[in-house]
Image 1: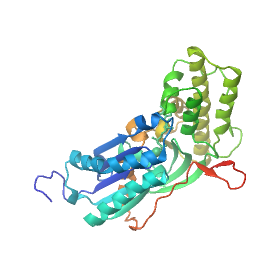
Image 2: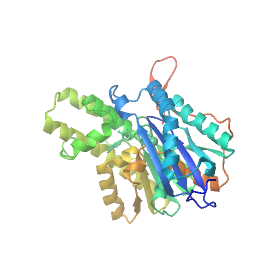
Image 3: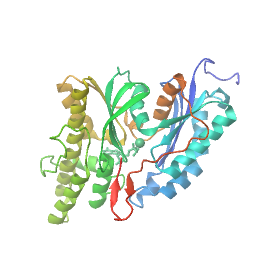
Image 4: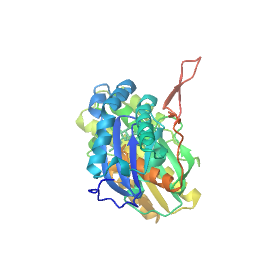
Amino acid sequence: MKESSKIDCMSQLILAIESSCDETAAAIIEDGTKVLSNIVASQIDIHKEYGGVVPEIASRKHVELILPVIDKAIVEAGIEKEEISAVAVTKGPGLIGALMVGLSTAKAIAFGLGVPLIGVNHLEAHISAIHLENEVSFPFVGLVVSGGHTSLYLVKNYTEFEPIGKTRDDAAGEAFDKAAKVLGLPYPGGVEIDRLAKEGRREAISFPRPFMTSSTLDFSFSGVKTSMVYYLKKHPNPDDKALRDICASYQEAIVETLVDKTLIAVKQNGVNSVVIAGGVACNSRLRELSKEKFQKENISLYIPSPIYCTDNAAMIGALGSSMFQNKESSELNITPFSTSRTKYKRGDGGKVKSA
Ligand code: KG4
Ligand code: ZN
C-alpha cells in the first residue's frame, strides 16, 4: 500500500463492474455505502441509430471501454489497486456477450490481486442501490422496473430476495421503448414518452390495465402496447397535441398498474416500506403517483436518485459489499446467465417471452 493513500487500512473496498447491457460501468465502494467513484460509459448514442441495443455492438464496445473505465474508477477513488478487498461483478441477467466482458475482466483482476470474486444478480442490485442513500428497515417490497424486467421481491435482509411477482410478457421499460418506436420517437423511448407526457392529458385515451382485478402479483404489458398500435391504426399521423395525449395516457396505464400492483404486494405481505428501482424508476409520473398513493396508505417509499436507477456499478458494489460481509463469494469458473427477454419456441416460430 502506498503511503499517500487516504483510506483507513481497516476499510472494505469493493471494485464493482457492470456490463449487462449498453452501459460499461465501474465503481469503488467503501464500507458498503460510501461511493468513492462511479463511472458509467453509456453506449446509448451508438444504439440509438438502430432503435435499440444491438448485442454484438454492445459486446465490442464493452471490450474497448472496460479497462479505461475501471482505471478511471480507481484513479477517481484515490486508491491503489492493492487496497481492493474484493471484486463484485454482474453475472446476469443480461446479454451474454456483454456480461462475458465484465465477468472475464473481473475474474482476471480478482485472480491477479488474490481477492474474492463476487458474482452479483443485476436485478437484486437495482434494489440494493437504495442502501447507498437511505436506511430502509427489513422486510420491504422491492419493485425492479427496467428495460428487460419488471419484478417484485419480498426483501428480507441485505442479501435475501424472494421473488413474488414478475411480468409474464413485456417489461415496463420494453413497453415504453416499443411504443416510442411505433410513435417514431428516439431510443430510449421511456425518457421521450416521459417528456412528452408532461404536456398531455392522462385521461384522453383509456388504455388497458391488465391483471388489475386479479390478486396475482404478476404483470402483463404486451396488451397495452398492442392497444396503442390499434389506436394508431385508427388515428394515424397524430399532431403534436394528440401525440402528447397518447404519451400521457399510455404512460398512465403503465405507471398506475405498477403502483397499484406494488400496493397489493405490500398489503399481501404485511410490510410498510417499498423500494422502487431500475431505469423506469426515473419516470417522473411513476415517482409522483407512487409518492401520492403510498403516502395515503402510510407506507414509506424509497426511490434511488436517477443516477443509481439506470444501470451503474455502484449498485453492484452495494450488494457485493453485503455479500462480502456475509462471506459469500464465487468460484472463478462461474458463467453468466441471460434469462433473456425473448425466447423462440421451436416448431411454431412463435415468440415466447420470459422475464
Ligand atoms: O435499468 P436500465 O438502465 O437498464 C436495464 O437494466 O434494462 O433501464 C433502462 C430502461 C429503458 O427501457 C428506458 O426506456 C427506461 O429504463 N427509462 C425510462 C425513463 N428513463 C429510463 N422509462 C420511463 N421514463 C423514464 N424517465
Ligand atoms: Zn438494469
